[in-house]
Image (cartoon, rainbow, N blue to C red; front, side):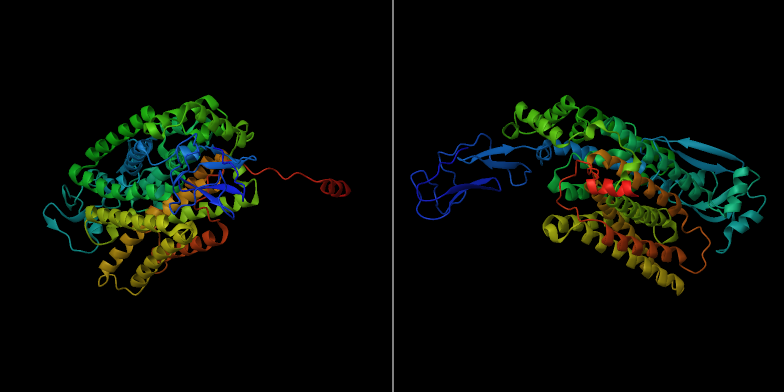
Amino acid sequence: MTVSRGSNGRSWVELKAGRTRAVKDAGRTGQHGLDRGNDSSRIPSYIHFPHKPVPANSNNNYNISGDEMTVERILSVDAMFELDRYQLVVLLFNEMLIFTMLSNVVSLLFNVVIIYTHIYIYYFFNAYFVFNIFGIAQPQLLGCDGIVYNETNKCEQLSAHFDCQIPDLRYEFRSTTVEFGEFCPQYTLTRLDTVLALLGVTNKPRFSTTIQMVGVIFGSALSGQLSDLYGRKRVCCTNYSVGTIFIVENLPTRHRLWLSTVITWAPNYILFSLVAFLANDWRQLARACNVTTIIAIVILAFFLPESPKFLIQKKRKGEAIEALSRINNWKKEENRISHNDIVSIVQNACEKSGHVGKKKYSFLHLYSTKAFAVRTLVASFGMFSLSYVTYGLIFNLDVIKGSIFLNTAISGSLRWIVGAVVALLDHFGGKRVGRKRLHFLTVSVIMLCMAVTFLINVTEYNDKLGNVIRLSTLLAFGITGCVFLQFLLITAEMFPTGIRNIANSHINVCGRIGNVFGPMVFSIPAPILGFPYLLLTALCFTDVLLFQCFLPETKGQPLPSEMPEKKKKTVEDLELISKT
């Protein structure tokens, strides 16, 4: 587009929100000046656009140069991701991914059920997370063979009842604990029982969740490295732990948080509670969950291309062009760009990324600079503390009042409501409501809930204020969902493409350590009443302090693509080294 200069002043073009406005510096409009009418959106007839006007949410940049002020549209990879039909496919996959991760993620872990003198190992498509809320749900022991036990020390009465044949149980869901009779501690002479007795572990089903989480640690550590070497899609087809990064790299920059908040874990807690209620048996529930896994694999394998950002980072230009072309084909005809534009996008992106694609990265690069090291450690601790709190609460819902189905559904509803509020704050709050401010607000509320519950326990008002404990627990758990999302987003936004998945993997590994120990928080010996809640309060406080002091604000920033350059030694540095 060319704008001729007027004889009485200088003209220029201002591009904003998809409209072109021509403005005069001073004086009268010359022969070729621009219309200064009241309608600033009108475009003079002699101005020709080689491309369509740019939508308001576009990330396209423009270069204005030359004596005649040539305005050239410059496209970027981020600009290809808009709210279009492709995003519907991405969000559908995200929903299937989340439900699968919630119930049965596809790396083969095992659910360990210990029965008297044997260990039975049941393989699912990774049956952990919410599955074990129901899978190891504790029944209520009423008595045995028609004999009703009193309300205190029922397990001791069962142990003394040597000829007990059919225990009288009350339960909402037929879990592995019910099927295999692990509703009371039963130590035998196996080596595992000896070790568990030394560790003070009395709840074997709960300990099985801890064993599962140990397996998740290895999966998280391995999958991040593999996805940065061989691609997001290929690894995600066999291990869903890298799916979050794949989704983030396919979402429009401006809409990352609210899209990730709308399609999130919260509604799936409600849906999973309904599926569990209908199944009413842990085996049927496992089969039902695997159906979503198959759907997710089909969508990923046949409808979604490899992440263009990964392909560009690896300098695989041909595959990157093909991936962007597939994304472009999902757009409406009038919104599509030409093949030459796609080639230019890839070429420019590869040139900007320098030589990063030729280098292999590892976990050591997370500590290659002081800034990276601090960010890695703080985010890792934050994910650990958050996971410890979350899994400590969710796998111990039996310690609070109410139905397990209803409590799970309520917690999911609260996660959705809180997530929606956070999404609205993020979308309409602009830069005033950044990642750090949201984190401070949400984690502080969790800390307050845990502190209130601790005070109720330490003052022994549990029975009178049982509903307050229930509300505080469910509210705290409901808030944790959006905090997980904050950590995942800020991790993707803090680290460059070359180590982004490695950083995500590192932080997830630390989170899985919290998963390992969190379920046992109510089983450890407590020096004072309510000690588990005091511990959770302290973790939240430390997380808030470190996050606010050491992590940067990343909201609205483009995903970094390049590693920082190594500092070159100056002549003075070399002379100083030689003298020493």
